[in-house]
Length: 479
Image (cartoon, rainbow, N blue to C red):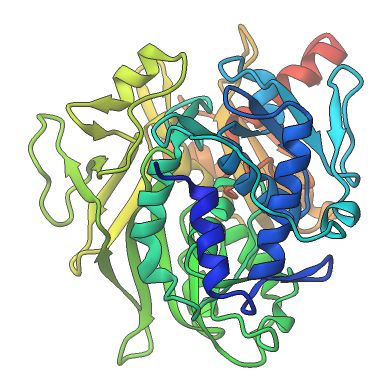
């Protein structure tokens, strides 16, 4: 029977001296990392972890996260990240909680502490008798990105991760790719790429400083638009081969900046439910302008009209996706599953259109449509309007969550100059009225130091609304 952990051990045995993980915390060849996995597996087994267990892990350590990932695969136990989504949603119930020393635990949760120092100092280990594991039983529990509403959990078996990693082999030629990613080590975008990389005996560089990527041999970088924007304060000393951007739309002027530091820039479309589904390559044309072309993956992507027929080029419609390794539904969420998974397709809730060169142009999300008394406002368009005001760094417009609120909309705005906030807020209000008419006003403009974001880098409007509710509870009303 297939076991992802054993799969990696076999790969490591054939490429023992090739680098697996390179970082400030520690460096491992594939042989050394395989031994860490085995040592860690034995320790987890001594804690009673095995088939039927579900391990919740909290860490910022890449070696610990990936070590626990492959160790739980060997043991046949489930794995989930211990984060705010797990605490809020009750459809995945861990049996064991693990953390590394640098993160805080919780008094109510019995965390076991994993110290990399003693794990990595263990003697060469032999594979214990872990017994057979079911490759089709849920192993990796991931929360959705929230594009279909509140984040929900899916349970992916080891066989699905094998198939997703197999599909990603084109991105990770055997022993020829060195990956650096700005996604947190516990996030789905990180795990998807890291697992695929290690199964191809490639290397992962755990280094957030872009100026060091070239010396480390990095030829593949993955990040969200917000992450790569913050990292690229200036063009890299020399161009790297490839940048994959995912998790949110690339700002119109950003691609030209990316192309100063990377030979290839790809805008990736995907979700926890389907993995990477489509890519759009951005490049400079003969006139020095940014152009785009579609790069279909092994998924089928369609854009539909309201009547269910397929859209032509340039027509806006609803996206649906299917492939051989998409999940079947959400855990404990039958209504949400029935809405998002229909007739063998996954409906992520995105509006999009096809460009002239086969590129997928995502225009917004259905959940970001704010219905105000029959007037439907696309939140992304409202964001863009506010962002057009000089002095605004970024903004998020969302429905006022407070009951009986006089103003239906709120905007969280990051301003560049605090001294100009009052004048710029007035300009935002007037611009909104000129654009949408007096009947749709935006009078609640709230200055914030930064916008809440999810781990994919997308603005988290639900978190914005929760902040408003929490503030109202403290002050006994909006202030």
